[in-house]
Length: 241
Image (cartoon, rainbow, N blue to C red):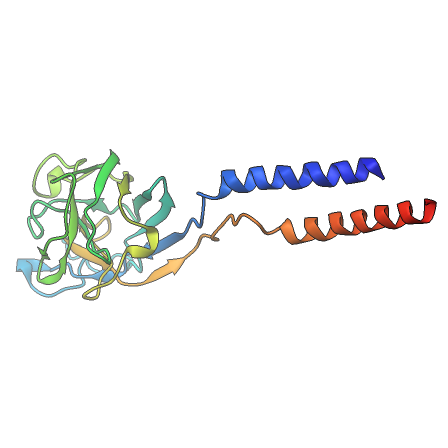
């Protein structure tokens, strides 16, 4: 019995030590956004919807695109880790519609943010405060990054196909990305199927990560078990007396 009681005491102390270590972990959210809205113009700069359309720049029939890419944001290290993966051979480009930005987004609360660990992106200003950034007539957006993998303006200077863009953004959370005035993100692309260029955006958010961990979930059971053992030991001592 003494061994069990000693185990309870040691177990409780170990839990509290772990709880102190986990106290700062909190919740870690992960959200995913799909680029599905097509603002790309066609021949002579007319119309919209040409990046995902069924006719390419050579007037040939191609398969339509339902999504141009995926953006994933996860809480990490006092900020978020953000990844952009373009699909179907689409490439980030600088056409001038958001010059000098090719990737734009909005955050609630308008914090001042800091970029680090940039891959494929480049920071125009770092730290960056909320602004009003035009993007081909929709938006405006508050924050933006340039295409670091692009070598200049135009299709021949676009980022290589299959480039995975990533960045750590300090000073915000995954849940803070907002769709005011209607879009979470905007990206300037060269379509891998039609050859047309222009902005696409993401206006829908999906939570894909499970929040956690939470310190304290096992404490009630541990207390009840130890309490029962203490009561049993006390009763045994009374009987022997």
